[in-house]
Length: 242
Length: 104
Image 1 (cartoon, chains in turn cyan, purple):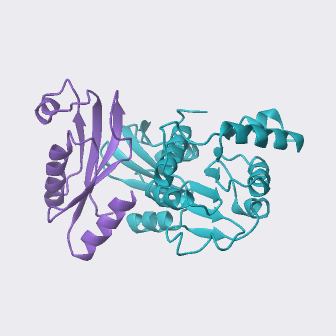
Image 2 (cartoon, rainbow over the protein chains, first blue to last red):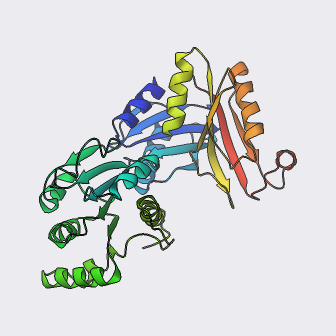
Image 3 (cartoon, each protein chain N blue to C red):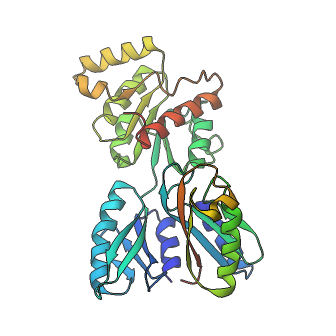
């Protein structure tokens, strides 16, 4: 029953935490909690459930899983494994260009939900992006506000066309996205930064843009560049890069 | 996690019982994070991992035991541990793995 509910929550991409007694007489007892702290099951007594609930919600927010010591109502020292399943990360790709195809496929491998945005419908076909979760055929500055951009979101800007790239970058910077990267050489980056600065974007926000995009692994083909972009996103997600 | 879930669904669909091993705690260098899972079916099939491979053999056996006995266990592997020496925890860390039958 708990397992079925856990699988349903994961299918629907609802964040949940699963607590299990791993040391103590109630070995294996479980409590499944949703984001609001509503539970299914019990670890043995209400006080223990309550103490674990508070820790589990904090760990869910921090996207961490841990085993922690607790005490039961009867005073027994126990250890509880708290596994958290945050909502899956979301990759928003602006530009249905060639690189976006392997980037979508590789991001799916890493567990990202992938949305591709491009107003040019010739680029944005289901045949080109069979693995994408959503294709949005709108101008990026109109599409991005509707995509619930938050700290689980990475935005990658790939069109190479300032008419699309610059408004997309400006729109993405209005949200607390965890990663924002834009394609283009150092020269292109300088031009973009100057244009955005002129449009009123602060230096602080400009510093959030990763560009030239990706870790410098010398990638040449679209697949290699996709991997270098995802490598940089992983580094940011895991706290190895600002 | 997705590949482990898909494996469990398939195992249950063919009537196999499943044991789950989950990394509960790591000390020092460890290749897999807390929550990483290895699933083992009663017919010997498996999916996922709890280490880079160094303790998978011992954990696989514990999974087969728990399918039979239903007795949950918290396994501990470390460099100072004879058992870990036998199975060869090459990464030099310590790790605790909770093993249970999937009957919840």
